[in-house]
Amino acid sequence: MRHFNATRTAACVLTGIGAIALAADPPAKIAPQPTYQTDMDMLAEAGTPGMHHRFLNHFIGDWDVLATLRRPGSPPEEYSASATFDWALDGRFLQEEISAEVMGMQLSMLNYLGYNNFKGRYTIAWLSSTSTSITTAIGYQNHDGTEITLFGTIDEPHLNLHERTVKTIYRSESKDRFVVEIHDLHIPEPSSIVMTMVYTRL
Image 1 (tube, rainbow, N blue to C red):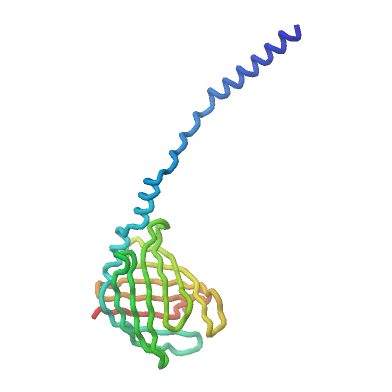
Image 2: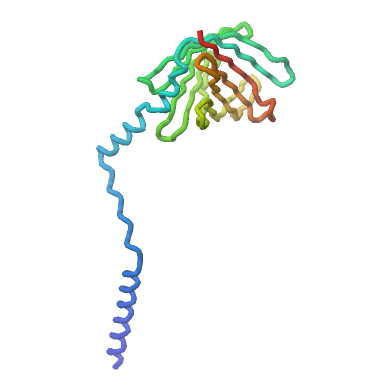
């Protein structure tokens, strides 16, 4: 008699488990394992210049630059510079070469502006003849396509300051004029602008 009850109990349990299994949602399909070819396709897609890179094409050319440096407690200082934009690495990065004389010292800069397809963000790197560091920033374009805003950090050895958070804005005003603003976000607005660079096409 006990054997009969135990068997019937086991059958009920198994039936219940089966009913629960049938009532549950079917398991989600497992995504196929990536293959070498899909890996290469994804890599090619992430590494191919696209629409966002073509937007940068209007910067190509030679420009006069008027730079205004603003420091708290001091009057603004103005400097003239020249800049040339051209494509590097088959249209993947926009290379800017800047030449200026600042406080009696010759200054050269290389800037690389591009769009990271994988992250979906614009990215920039600044290199200067007066520094051994590379400054980088990443950001986005506004809805009407007139501004690119990037955020990053910068060191200021002359002030013994590390990783100051900065915001850089590229603002297109016409095909022959654009403005770059650099904001030190440790300074309250509206005084956060530490440098303005006005580019006029030659």
